Amino acid sequence: MRALFAGSFDPVTFGHLDIICRMTALVESLVVAVATNPGKQPLFSVDDRMTMLRDACREWSAVSVVQFHGLVVEAAREFGADVIIRGARDGTDFSHEAQMAHMNRAMTGVETLLLPASPDVGFISSTLVRDIARFGGDIAPFVPAVVVERMSRR
Image (cartoon, rainbow, N blue to C red; front, side, top):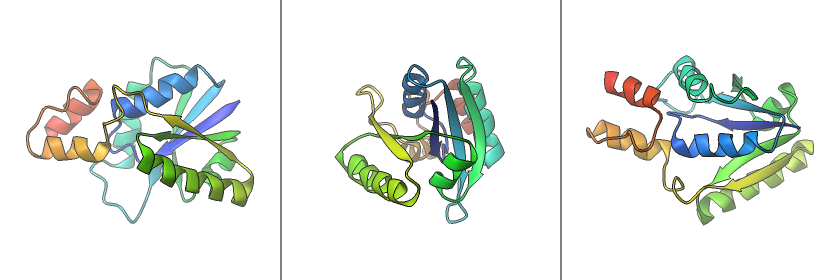
């Protein structure tokens, strides 16, 4: 089975890596797809996000990192994914992700697996990491070293 885990990953966090690690034990291959969204102003370029993800995922040979534009279901089709993976940190995430999963299945028949976040990383979000870094806080407990290094340059 091939799975697709899509997101902006701006930046990648230990929460993202928790989902990736757990999924590599369940699927033959995992495509981590970095979104380009013209409606957002990301902190990092797509190339930077992909580089950080590749560095953070290098221990998992079944993981490939790609870029995509548009709908996640189209990316799933493009990369031959059998299932879409989504993480859910809390009830609000679950509600939103369940609605998206139903829509994606209605559009294409592709199923979505919602994986609850592990309790030790379930509170981490890229938005919070960016806010902490913006005010000079220590982000090292929440992101891989490659992200700490790149954030310090900004």
